[in-house]
Image 1 (cartoon, rainbow, N blue to C red):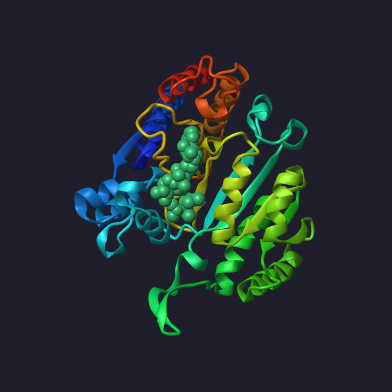
Image 2: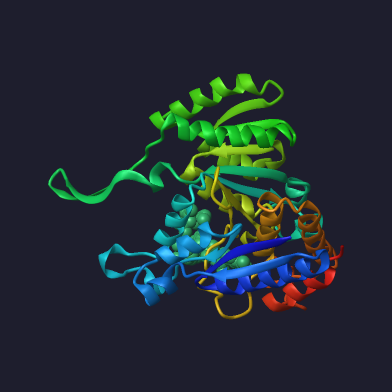
Length: 358
Ligand code: NAD
Ligand code: IPM
Ligand code: MN
């Protein structure tokens, strides 16, 4: 099959891990007889430097014409205090909105050989297998007004937490569909004891559960959910939650796998191509040093093969290669137990490439 992939490396380690992901995709294409054609686009801080715009129209067009989008990460200290409030992150939020990618799937899958890498006890994390379904185009991130304004005669700021019922319905449906083909348990995470949007969210989940009698539904307040994720993560199958809560919970959940550098994600909508990116950011503290763990980006590429191209065998081949490499003891610094034989981003990528088999 021939597929067009829009590649948006972005900033910092985004460039390094995207290179790793395309290298693995090249090997997969070669083995399985596909052609992946990459079209590169600017996004984030580099794009501000080049075009004074974190998301040029040309990048949006490249994505719209593609069969799937692979993204690295955006942001960095260089662009944190630019005049006019322009920020790299607006590029990422903008592309999610432009492609209407309302559902962000963040699987948290423990690898047996990595349980030692987690800061939590082995028996707590061993066998963790959950998915956080994060709403991605609404809530606090996008609600208007969002501005600086005078409040009670002093400097203030406003962000607006807004959800329409239809926005809640479509993400909750996605989560139910996912739970149906997994272990049939859905935990809806909210703050219904305080927030009106959460009360609407909870009501909507209650209405929709009639359509999914086979799925067990529970509601959990987000503060408790963050504690339960650390206390006993194996109680969870699918968790569905709004934008901000999902952002925070998924970074916390990444440590169940040993590192933020292990967590992939897929952002999908109804029409436009899906976008695939690691959950982590541009990691300015390790950028340019070959220290980045490429596995989150590589696993994100595998998610693209599965969800956008329906290449299940190929996606499985990549996931199996990742497991084999980990089982064989190969480690980047973030998941290593000691400082012996730490692999660079490129060396780790080569190990995965060598392990892929048809
Ligand atoms: P971060 O995710 O970039 O890094 C957090 C910590 O995790 C750092 O210590 C980093 O070194 C480590 N880490 C992250 N990915 C790693 C990997 N693949 N391998 C090894 N270690 C890894 O979060 P931050 O430091 O809070 O943010 C840095 C910048 O990234 C900010 O500008 C932020 O806005 C941006 N950001 C972007 C995205 C994205 O593009 N999707 C996500 C999160 C943060
Ligand atoms: C993520 C990131 C982004 C988010 C930022 C960079 C806008 O943290 O993808 O998790 O908050 O969605
Ligand atoms: Mn985040």
